[in-house]
Image (tube, rainbow, N blue to C red; front, side, top):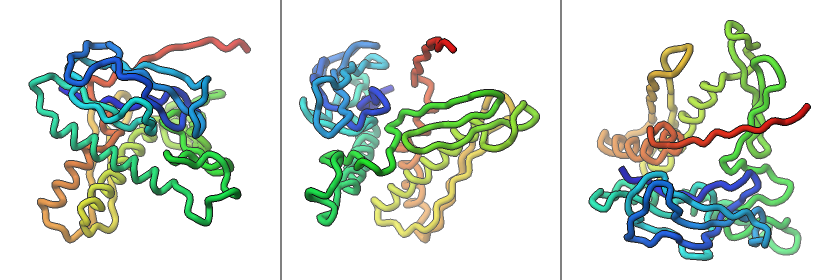
Length: 274
């Protein structure tokens, strides 16, 4: 199976990443865990000498089939930078998914550009080619979040400048003041599917009104063994068009991609003295 190589988020302050070097050669094999590229995090619009540098590693062996960045180019965290797949593996679906993601990134950058009335000396620093937030505005998390639990089974999640509560049912020792961690994940999946569906519909000029996504996990308690998602679309389009929209929406949903078996998670710990 092939996969899309993405610009990593090297820290919560990272606004975009710059390709410093391709350490693998397009068209040549890469082994599991081998370095593919060297990148630098840019916490501010200009690359600073003390920017964090990281290595993008292959999560599985294959061939570096496609590269989407030249040395010195910058993209937002999570944006596709390449494709790794076995030499005999068809990659049309991966290329389509990467193209969809790159289009979405381009749209985010375009929307974040200041209008002519916002530009000039009065505009705050931080807005630039890749749409970093102006000082004083809400800060997007850049795929870096933190959960804090002071006591009991209740806590808070912080993502950029956003914060919300998570909790557990009273039967599990909680106070029922917020969704459970599983509910938060399922909500993220539903939200991502709805946005991905909207993007695919808009891309095809399809006439679509409300999109509702219902996600259910079973069993109700304990480890999740099954997830069912239903996408409800208010539209007059034919079945073939809706089927195509939904298929591509699921393929391009980054949260649903977290459900794949080959997604690795590295877990570490540190002690903080009281």
